[in-house]
Length: 272
Ligand SMILES: *[C@@H]1O[C@H](CO)[C@@H](O)[C@H](O)[C@H]1NC(C)=O
Ligand SMILES: *[C@@H]1O[C@H](CO)[C@@H](O)[C@H](O)[C@H]1NC(C)=O
Ligand SMILES: *[C@H]1O[C@H](CO)[C@@H](O)[C@H](O)[C@H]1NC(C)=O
Ligand SMILES: [Zn+2]
Image (cartoon, rainbow, N blue to C red; front, side, top):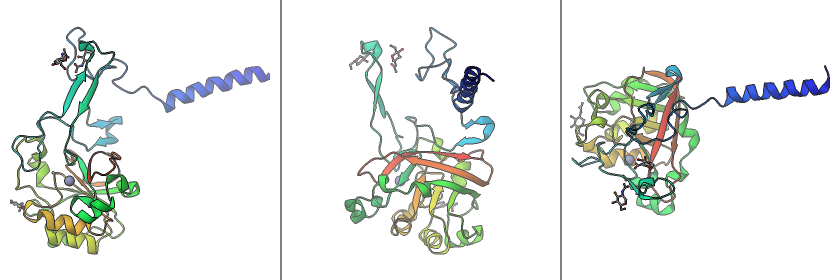
């Protein structure tokens, strides 16, 4: 084959490969802007919003941030957290939103400084969390619906040694608590002895749960202390676990690198 022709064929196959590696992002072809409601001028500009991607292979287990999502110990919900100080409607060259969001809002992560002041002062913030713990094989389990997560419940779950990441689905999901604006202190979480059992008798390092706290309200601080004292456990709270089969997945959770913050919103996905 003449070298030049070979070169063109090579180029051609390269561009094919690029098309495969960088498929168009669904929704962006027709809807480059992401305003919440479609502008009335063009009925075709409707952004796609989804909970699963790639025919269900990728499952978004993060709650969408909305003003009506619950806030800890409040009946008011999160409220307005997003503003548009500069808008094109006001003559700016672009829209630039600003947000003000408590660090433990919605689907979020806790760092050791959350309940240990000396860890906070020493800088154990969300930027220090181990991404290896936050990413890897994970087990989604259903816990008994009639109890909080006690040592007895933990024992009955029989999580095998070697399992390092577990997402606990509870009655909170059935009750759809994350979709209710009013905070509900009767949510299910870990009792102190359940947290202690997990720390001492399992290899679980990533603990995920489906409401705003891994700790049951009655053991709020004692359970957090059990989990966070060793600085090896990472707590992901407020996960969206509806409509997911129990079993093994790969989890990916990425907190923001908020220097000095003991909490951060986190995007978590499961991959089949
Ligand atoms: C323009 O800016 C003002 C002041 O910041 C704000 O109150 C108003 O809502 C803005 N108008 C539009 C159309 O964005
Ligand atoms: C879990 O504990 C809370 C208090 O922290 C309580 O209100 C709730 O009823 C308990 N849930 C179950 C299922 O026992
Ligand atoms: C951003 O600017 C565009 C163009 O002016 C406008 O249509 C859109 O509504 C703005 N976004 C918001 C949230 O106001
Ligand atoms: Zn938290």
